Length: 177
Image 1 (spheres, helix red, strand yellow):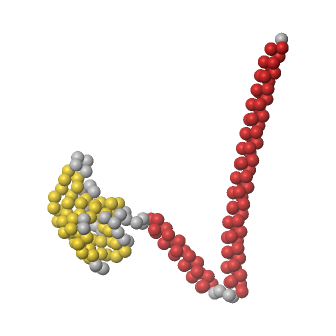
Image 2 (cartoon, helix red, strand yellow):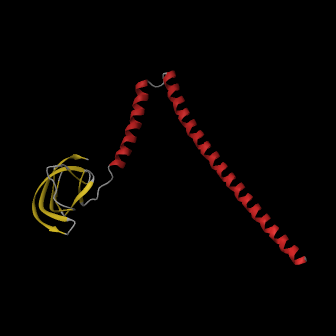
Image 3 (cartoon, rainbow, N blue to C red):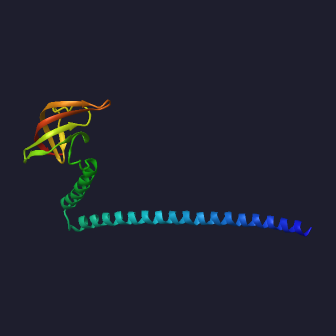
């Protein structure tokens, strides 16, 4: 009978330990979630305070006559232009220096740049990524919008892709992209 009582006691102890462990896990999880909610609320409150302070500064400047509405608007416009530049950089990522692009999509790789001045670029060779290039369309090279003319010098069919080769490609620079 002593062994049976020991077995039952051990069994009850195991369930007690499991129950205590589950309660501890639940309590720790609740504390972590509460801390996250507190941190998020504090950050939101700090952001709101920052916005409120900036609005109060603008109101004070306008009410005291320290800054004319035109100055406040021009400062806001400058900040807006700065943000628009950042967005434009994200919309128009840097191009590969050895690729021609059409609508931000690479369409060809270029060979050696033979001539490069403020109005023209000439390449010794251009090889398309897949198929022919429509030289009637505006292309992009590095940071410039260009329009090119060239004559096909041959092509190579690789099953699913066709590479077309152009030589002595002359391009006019239209402006920055």
